[in-house]
Image (cartoon, rainbow, N blue to C red; front, side):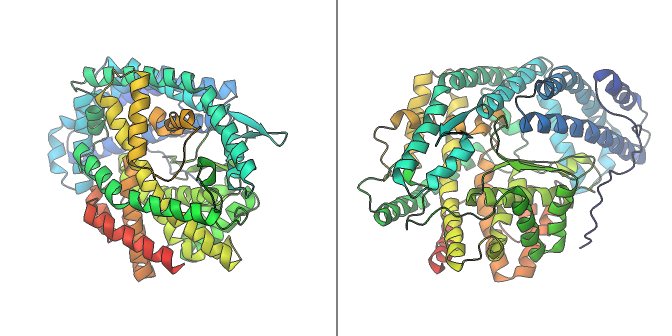
Length: 572
């Protein structure tokens, strides 16, 4: 594989080299030119599509940088204002023109002469976008984006003071791994109390989002936002019923394992009752794992780890570091969470996270690194739409990277016992991830199927669903009020509704990729990379097949993959 990763964007062919989409006045002429263009044959249609793609790449990258800067420093008013201006003044003006461009494309008689599968998938998606478009939804979507932004600002401002030091919640969370149980409890209560202090604000914010989203669905002719969103996300390869089947399979096949793991933890810790603050500490009483010393160390070790798989993978991270496309440290005023933001024109993404030197942070870096590799692998596809992969595939890229790198985690842990412990913790975490995905997804279905629900009804339903997908060993007595609002820490509910089941489907796929890799490392890695290069030029099942795995979430398949994970756990 060619390891030369250019940090220069490609030469523009339609838009001026000097163009910066700073305001609507600078953007509008290009949209008008596309709308007025004459399309006389199939060649000019493809040329027109490339021109549109170029414009959209430039604009999306500008929006991306504004979002990145805002999340890196939520207290910076200039960054907040720049992002708000884009959302409020530019996006709403682009939406109706995009609709007209879709109409022009869909109505072109030459479209039928393009028979390549990538374009057929694109046309199907654009036809759905065209069908769902409603002028009256533009201001509602703008308002929803504004409200979602508030969630990041509220969460980013949350800090606690422990041991005389002000900490972000992510930094305080590392104390949950302390072998001192009193310290763990103190940290847990401090974090939970801080979140609890904003529970009403976040409840009110969520209520506003539900009202807006339900109205958007009604305007588009749907009974509820769930059904609207499935269409808007072009989920042609599965249905809500498939999600429910996945939930049921996870509950039957994996939740009993959570009870076993919790009972083992309780016994090893010699506790009369297992409390929420006992879930992250090493059950054998060892201090927390420290896989890296600081963010520079994390980057260097990640590069070496990726190099061992393929030097190209290491070069992806090295290149991002070289051009300052990494912001990894946790600090006050920084938005929570982590992400890899694809930058469509330059093709080198940006990784954002809140690292505090934990195993979870290491896994997050590997996860986002998988996304980053994906972004680089599909950067040269003909159209920007081909790079917008379905989330099920995007998360397959990231979650598989967590697992196929495990044979090289000695880079992070030079002690064999710590290495085994890290692997065991991660595999156990995977078994816990699938029920959590089912919990959040099931909750979302109920929320939008019942948009008029009260806060009390929501609390009751949350506890019912949480109980169904959690172990029955953990003792929540005295912490019930905190449990009522655990869902508020899941930013997807606020910022990207219904983007969560993908983690479940992709986690199954990632286990299958890892299984193939363990059987034949070269064939496994080649299949994985080959699948990522496809971008969105194939359907989800076809991309999974390219990786030599199934897009399958039946109970039998889940049982087979979980058995493999348990075998690997036992081997450690």
